Structure formats: C-alpha cells, structure tokens
Image (cartoon, rainbow, N blue to C red):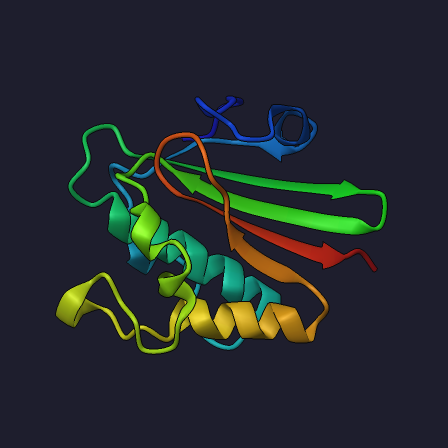
Length: 144
C-alpha cells in the first residue's frame, strides 16, 4: 500500500518534505518480493537497503518503509526509512564496517560496507541519518 506521508521526527523536515514519498505497508510482503538478478549497481544498493528494512521489521506490528527520492540542484537523494527499533548509537558507524553484522547468523556483514564503498567510488555517500524513529539510510549522488 502506498500513501503520502511525512515520517515522525524527521531530522531535516524541509529537505524531506521537498521529496516525493510513499509509505509501503509491508505486513503482507517479504524480501522475496524484491526483483532479483543482475541490475544496475545503484538499483542493487536501493534493493539492499529495502531488504534490510524488511528484515528489521519482520516482528513489528504495523511495519512501514518510507522510501523517498528527490533531486536538489546537482544532487540526487534517495532515503529509506523504516519504523523498526533503529540502530543503537554505539553501532551507528560500525554497521558500515566490513564483516560486522547485527543479524547474528542471518547476516554476512558485507552489504552495507559494499554499498557505501560503491557509492563513494561514484562520488556519493551512504549515511545513517540521526533523529526520528527507526532507521533512515540516505544516499546522495551527483545528479547526471
């Protein structure tokens, strides 16, 4: 289900409001609903962020994922926010380290590290935004 919505506690409300958004009700979805197979690297980064959000919300009542896409001047911005428990402050940078995982045996600890490195090589960035509920991963790239 998609609907227009603004997430609670947005760290940069003016920026977030300027972007197109939609809430995805994932209560009847699974990671398996994501497209698989070879694709564009940026598409794979976004799919990985969505898969992580789905995983974080698998035991949450009324789970939601809020993807946003916008273009500001010379930047393209994509964010994926979820209504899960978020990332503890002590782990906010560690989650981007190669082979570090918070998922135990269910995680490999490579996805976020590879996504961040890929975006850095393109002159972009992958960050974890502060504030609000859940987790919000942001991608910034120079627009073509």
